[in-house]
Image (cartoon, rainbow, N blue to C red; front, side, top):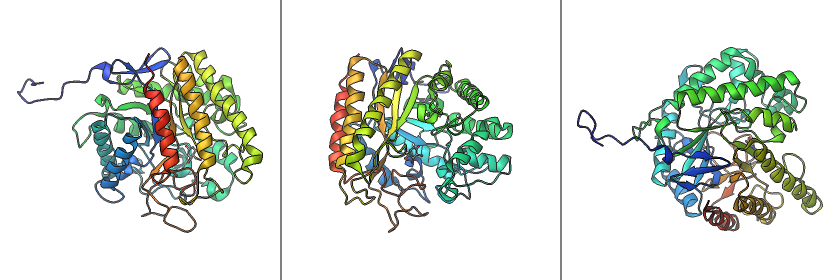
Length: 428
Ligand SMILES: O=C1NC[C@H](CO)[C@@H](O)[C@@H]1O
């Protein structure tokens, strides 16, 4: 397009080029759009020009994901510098108002390469958990409370209850909105395209796994949480009329097992689709030291979780994406030399329910497995991450190899491709 001053400008994207919601499904470029996704939290980190950047690896990872039919990536867009031991370093926010432009340019590079492969990205703007600083770090900045790493204290209940204080802290919310505006209104330094006009962003996501507090969240805490989701999602839409907004919720496991809360938190018109996550080992449904004895319990509860949330999506008349799920390697082991028979069996169970119900026209719109490890490799005998080590699918608060799908996990990659083909074949 020739602009007024004779300079060739990119034509503004057509609305249909963005991922949109069509009743209980996604649409993109006039077609039904199903999510065959990977969690790739560190994609922006690999895109940095220096420091932690590994652009050659990033291109190879994107090509390998594209080759097995992956069309969507779920990526950490913002991290906060923190003293918490099990958090990633560096961070995109060093302190309130102080941002790491080199790291943010890494996100620009990722988005430029994603566009070349016609993939889409969900960008989450905060984290309920400590591995990227997250909401707890905001409270350290604005309440002066110590950022207590639950990997150290082993007290997750107290961590969750205190972290939910983020929603009520006006100063923390103001800085959070400053950061949201900085990213949503950002102009990509590689492509020159405003993020708000980038059709390869599928959705802005409030946070990774925001919870109302711990499992005993009070009615007041739940009300604060519902209002926070509505307010922040509305704020994002006020900045960007093109993109979808999602919460990043895990579903009932992240809603104090309160289905009414999950419905109330996602009923707002400001939330365009639902999300849920499935973690049989984390939730103690599956014991990887007793796989045979715990499999039936784990798969029965998993099937119920998968199906019941699709029914909740029907109630709200919105699409739902299973945007995280995983299981550890046989053994259990963190080593890439170990097999993944049990995980592959679990993945197939999950994929079969998602694909079958999607083919039936139910509001399940796809999946993102957790998480792409690709060519990354654990560097230390204890499998814990240290600055300078490869990034893998497991963030620094977990052993490097716990849930990652590596490029050497051939049976898993073949399985993902098998179901990618099924979802991509759905015409609506
Ligand atoms: O968002 C998340 N959900 C579960 C993952 C695996 O335990 C975890 O690494 C991450 O914080």
